[in-house]
Structure formats: structure tokens, C-alpha cells
Image (cartoon, rainbow, N blue to C red; front, top):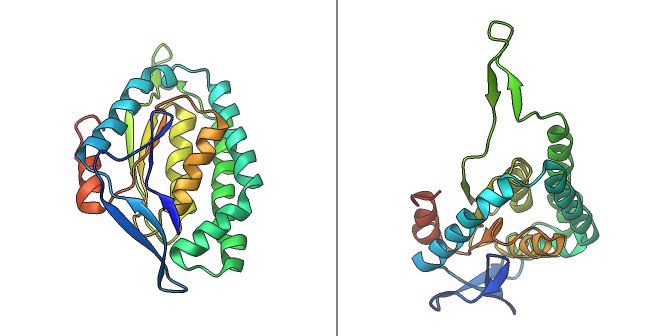
Length: 220
């Protein structure tokens, strides 16, 4: 059985603040396939604090550097596609052929297309011909809390994480506790790609716990 108890906070894999094991069930066998830890308030606070501390530096990182990191992530995601397909199939029961042909490629599609969309995005634009001296500034405002479901895990994770990374926001992800393995693998990929510490964080947990703490956090 896989051990995925650690959280990804401030660029490191860390133990939960308190033990609270949760078994992940493989729907195809109805047997446990992995164990995670459900985080608590201290874990949520640590992840948010790391993201908040990293925000200003990431916001002012040149866009070319942010784009390069996301492109590197795409390379890693494609290279480890079979690992991702196996993780998704195990955690949420998709047939392996569907996992390979639809679930994993959904993430690839989103990463590629957000990169393409961001090529033409301007953070500063004229207000309009009626006000030629005025400008509109598009800026990230801080930490993004992300809560994703079990049924299309990489579709949802990439939909949320990638645009945040490109525009200069920092993030704390809470994936579904019943399908957390793909998100855990995605966090490994983010680390391998070399994103700065604190820019992306992941804490496992359930809705009443980490979900509520994250959605109601004053720094999110």
C-alpha cells in the first residue's frame, strides 16, 4: 500500500502536524491502495503562510521565467504520463485506457492552452480611446485556495494551478481526499520543475477540515 502521508509545503515534503490517517480505496478492488494523512488547522496555516511569503517575489518574477517553469512542468507531465494514468485509475476507478486517453490528456491540453493564451495576455492595457492617458493594470492579489474534486482530477487541478502560476499568484491545493494520488504526483512534478519554495503548496484533507479552513482563511 502506498504511503502518501506527507504534505508539500514551502518546497518540502513535510509530516502532518498530527497523525490522522485516511485510507484511499481502489474502486476496482474495493480494497485500500494507499494511505494519506488528513491535515488540520496547523497544516493549513503553514501552507497559506508559505504561499503568502512567496507571493511578492513570485508576482515580480519576470513573466518569461514563469512561462519557462510551466513549460518545464509540461515536459515532466508528458514524460510521466503513464505514472499519472496509473495513479488516476487506482484512485478513482477510471479504466486504464480512459485514464491514458482522456484523463491525463485533459491536463496536457489545459497546460498547453493556458501557455498559448498567456502569450497574448497583457498585464497593462489602455483604458480606451476616451481616456488615452489612463491604463488598466491586471495584477494577482495574493494566495489562491484550490479545492478540487475526485472525478476528473488532473482536469481540475491544471485548470486551477496553471493560470495562477502564469499570472504570478501563489497557491494552496487541497485535492479530493478520496482521489489524492494524482495530485500528490502533480506536486512531485511541480517540485521537479523547480518552482520557487512556497509558490505551490498541497495539503491533503477533507471538506470539513482543510476545505473549510482554506476557504475561510483570512490570508486567502
